[in-house]
Length: 192
Image (cartoon, rainbow, N blue to C red; front, top):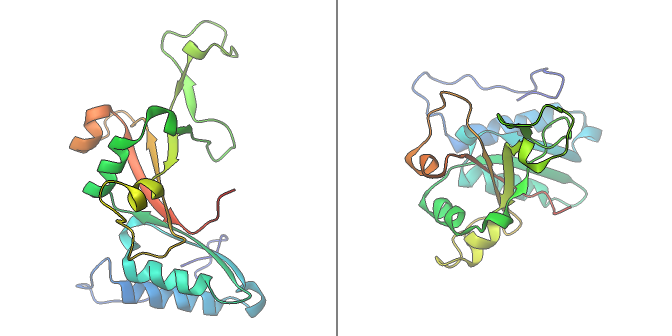
């Protein structure tokens, strides 16, 4: 774990045979990283975890930390795409997707190969949307499979991003059906 300056706050040396998705280890490192912060800096935190660290136990632990009085902890954790998520994605209407905004605050789009000569034009046909995002929580909580998130924290929300793959990218069979690469994550961040 590190802060935004790249300084390690906590780490855990493990045996070479240790599993990559050991919840107890991820919880221990998270708690050690938080404890390494000055007390005044522990009240408002954002914890990010990639998909390899995602587990029910870790998300439940982060939710418990977020519910402490006088503390704010927002988490963003990578999420696996299983059959339930694929089913929810298939149920999404096209208008349910919102064009994604990149790190620079601009829409994720590129010029079409057959675009006009004016590179600053606003012609819809000249631009290709590169990425979209939407929330899956409602479909997973109230979808055809009943509440598939019943055992997860109530404030946890599931999001999916789809983006055009880079040349040479290997898509799963599911992704190859429509040509989009999908990435999922969960968060307790409130709607804005």
